[in-house]
Image 1 (cartoon, rainbow, N blue to C red):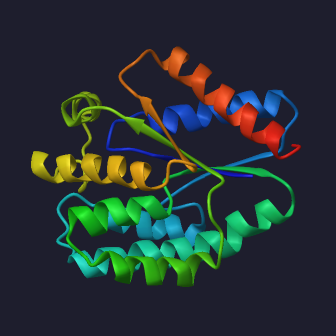
Image 2 (image 1 turned 180 degrees about the vertical axis):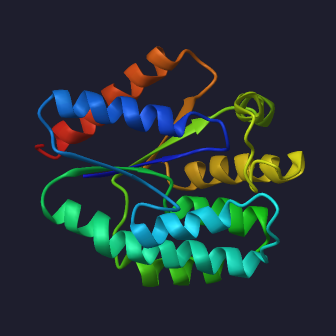
Length: 206
């Protein structure tokens, strides 16, 4: 079972991945928790470059580096974990490329789709949880941390594009996406996530 979490910066993805992972493990499930960019030694090395706040990266370069990381991720972590019957929880996956490099950077969505098909080799999420909040709320949370990366330092208009993109992606694929209000209490949001996931697992006999 492959479950991905998406959302703008500061939407709470990592928090909910961790909470759901702990919950599922206590229920006796085998869980692999991972993230993009990253998830492998190669991916984490590329992540450290991509997020450097003072680095100038061209949009196409950015896309190709993300996809290189994803290719390694799918082959080394995601596909093997799924084949072994694990539940894989991933903080960002293919939808992030459409949102950030497509809608945000202006790269043709057809190009992104073709390249994503190449690197994922048919691996597709069973469920994508989109944690939605306003840009002001999300960036406010990140600013409180005091360490903004290259994406978090982008202009407000860029983040507005990302949020709109995610909502459009969710509207276009309602069977896969679940959109949740990330401004609500963490415990209440996590409760809804667990209900959705338990329903999904039951429907697949897991």
